Image 1 (spheres, rainbow, N blue to C red):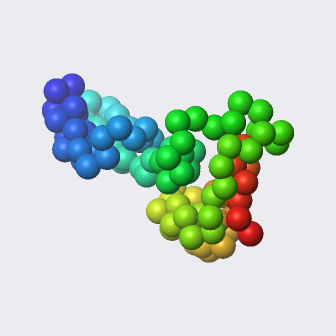
Image 2: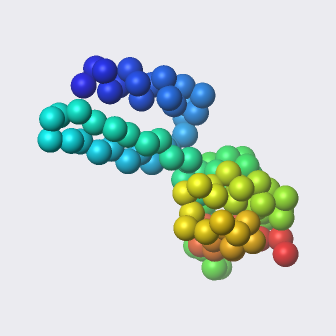
Image 3: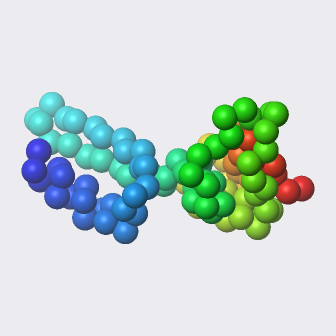
Length: 107
């Protein structure tokens, strides 16, 4: 367990304070492998807009506006985790997440 924690801390030291999804595979011989993914889209959006939390009433209450350049930046960062290689499609995925958080997306 200590070995895992040491490796995990080394791999994630540059991303302190971020929520990171991790895929862990444990093999029959008790060895393991893990992959640390990019932070959650919602966390990247909140961080880029300096928001503490999303709207409590999405669809009715807008808490911020996400500019297209930040939308593209977040989409590019998350490309490895999405099931698309098209940046425009990734931007649509991020835009949907933003709207569900009560954030207006600049067209």
